[in-house]
Length: 126
Image 1 (spheres, rainbow, N blue to C red):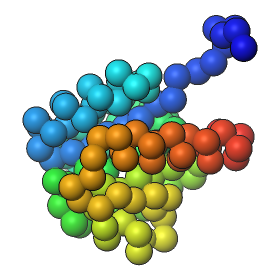
Image 2 (cartoon, helix red, strand yellow; image 1 turned 135 degrees about the vertical axis):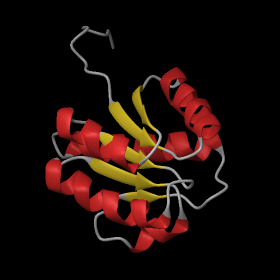
Image 3 (cartoon, one colour; image 1 turned 45 degrees about the horizontal axis):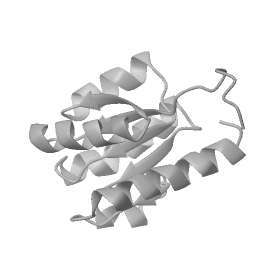
């Protein structure tokens, strides 16, 4: 199937407290074809959500537990159709989290999870 050039790039907001992890994971997501905005803390995530829309918000395990709990509410409040992926086991119990991976995941598992959430977003018309 030919690419018509009309496809839009899947936009990810990646919040992660550890700068090295943030940069390495964001680079891997970009190499996989995603457009990634990086945010090193909760305030930056919230600021970006006020000014832009994203298809997916990924919350890394080095954000505080409070951040990983509070930010999904903020995402859904500002952009109800945006998916939320939490990279920590406690994300599975949160009513506004669409997917989670346990801490210590492999990069391939993260990219697979993003792909599955992208497919869900596509079927929902997002």
